[in-house]
Image 1 (cartoon, one colour):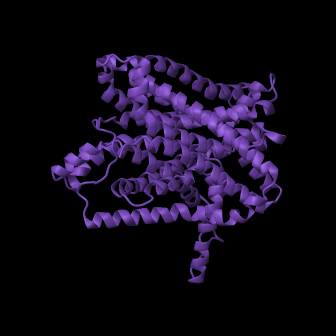
Image 2 (cartoon, rainbow, N blue to C red):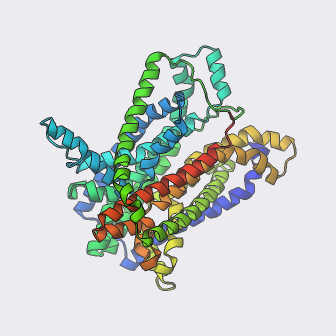
Image 3 (spheres, rainbow, N blue to C red):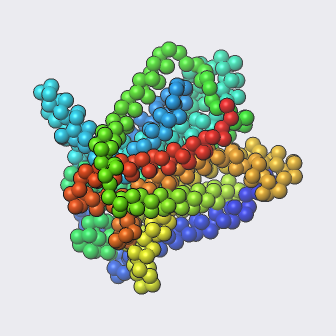
Length: 521
C-alpha cells in the first residue's frame, strides 16, 4: 500500500508487543505445568479417544453452526423490519450466556423432562434423549450459531450501499447477486467463522461435562480437568494441553490459506436498504428462516427468564456485590481486548505477517484455560497470594480469549479504512494522529463496538480462571451463582442466572449500539 500505511507504524509496533505477551501468557503457563510435573506424561488409550471425539464434535459443531448461519445472516441482511436491530442483538444472547445457564435452558426445552418431551409424551411418542454426541452438538450449535451469524453478517454489511444501487440499476437477479456479491463474501468470512467456532468447541468443557454422557463423549478439555482434579497427573494434563494446542494451531493457520480478503470498494457508509433480485418466494423463505432461528434460540432463554424473575429482588447482598465485581472486570477486559486487537490488526495490515499473527492470536483459544489458570497459579504462588490477583488475572485471560474474535472483524475493517482513506489522508498532509482520528477510527466504530461488547459479555459470564484463584469475598457473579447451586439454593441461583443474563446482554447491547450509532442513514 506504500505510504498510506505510515500512520499504522506506531500501532503496529505495539502489535508486536501484544503478540509477544499472548505467546508468553499461553505457552508460559503450559511450560510451567510441564516443568512442575517433571515432564510431559504419556497419553492413555482413553486420551486418544478423547482427542478423536473432540475433533469429531468440533468439526460437526462448527460445520452445523456456520452452515445454518449462512441462510440466517443472508435473510437478516436482505430483510428490514421493525425492531430489527433489537432482534439481531437478542440473537446473540445464547453465545453471551454462561455455558451452564445455556445448558439449563436447553434441558428445559429439549431434555427428557423438557416441554418438547412432554409434548411428545402427550402424543404417545418417546421422550427425547440429548446426552452424548447429539446433546453436545445441540448445545454447541445453540451457543455458537449466533456468533457465526454475526461474523457472516459483518461481512455482508461491508458491501457499500452504492454497489447495491448499481446492481439494482443493472437489473441483477438472484444468480448475479450470488456470483458477484454473496459467494466472494462467503469465501472470505466462512473459513474464519468456522475456525473460530472449531476452536471454541475444541476447548469445550462444561458442555461435555453435563451432556457428554460418559467416557465415549469426553473432550480433551474434560480429560485435562479429570487429570488435574481426580488424578493430579500434571504430566498427563500437560501432554493433553500440548495435543490441544497442536490441534488448534493447525486449524488457526489452515484458515489463512483459504480466507481471501476481497476489496468491496468504497462508499459513503450508508446502510444497505434494498437487496436486488428478491422475489416473493425469497421473501417468504427469509421470513421462515428468521422465525425458526428465533424460536430455537430464544425459547430456552425465555423459560430461564420466567423462572428467575420472581427471585430477582430477593437475592442476597453477596450476589449484587459479585455482580458489581463482574461489571468492573468486564469493562476492563473489554478495553484491554479491543486495544490489543487494534494493535495486532495494524501490524497485520501494514506488514506481511498475517499467517504468523493469526496463529499467535489464536493461542488464546488454543491453550486450555484450565492449563493457563493452573500454570499461572504455579508461577504466582511463591510471590503473591493467588486470591489477591484473582480478578486481574481473570480479566487478563478473558481479554486473551476474546482477542481472536475481535481481530476477525477488526482487521478487515482496518484494511478497508486504510485502503479507502489512506491516500486521501496522505494527499491532505494529515498527521498520524489526525489520520487516525478523522479517517480511520470512525470507520472502525462498528467493529470496535461489536468486539468490545463481545469481550465484555464473555468476561462477565466466564467461570474459569476465577474458580481456581478467587476465595471468600472476591467471587464474580458466575462463581457466586455456582456457590448458590452448590448449597441447593436453587431459587436464588435462578435469580442470579437472570441477573447474569441481563448483565451480559446489557453490556453487549450498550457497546454494540455505540458502534452502530455512527452509521449514516
